[in-house]
Image (cartoon, rainbow, N blue to C red; front, side, top):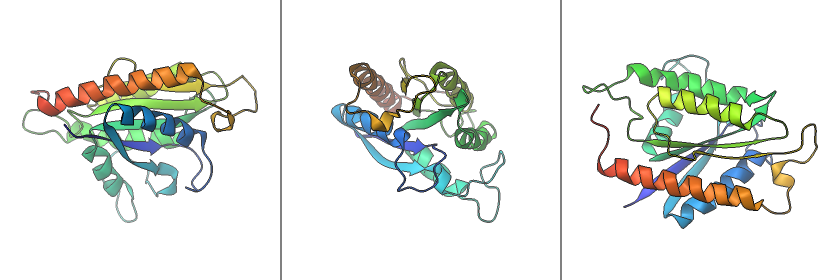
Length: 202
């Protein structure tokens, strides 16, 4: 069964060519997913797009969200990735979640949101405490808008408090991160295949 994943990078860096620790973590998960026969088709740097503020699926002229929304909903698995800033998920991540709020009112005849049957996991990086708080924010919001979260749904790395080393600066991926990435990918792929066969009745 063919299962695909899409990664969204919620870094604050809008230049797609700018080096990002979030991209480095996505690369770890991409490799892990490949081991479980899941293709990560694309990574979208959300800050590079003009996502208007709001809570509908289309906020009018110039809004990049409608096209991004289509890509997100076309994926079996969503990798929701981003950095920690001030102990919280980034403002870009919050903007994306706010736009996903529209799913709540876009249900089918069985009350299912367009994200029903889709799986989501988180990828988080940062140089301060906040990985658990950030994953809690992401998980609650994604669950509210219809995504299914597998066990062990977050892969993260947090450096020394007030330190200067970023994840992208590490000489090698820590063993614990690699093992967690494999578990995230394995569980997400398993749940996605189950939902691909039999989705929620609503």
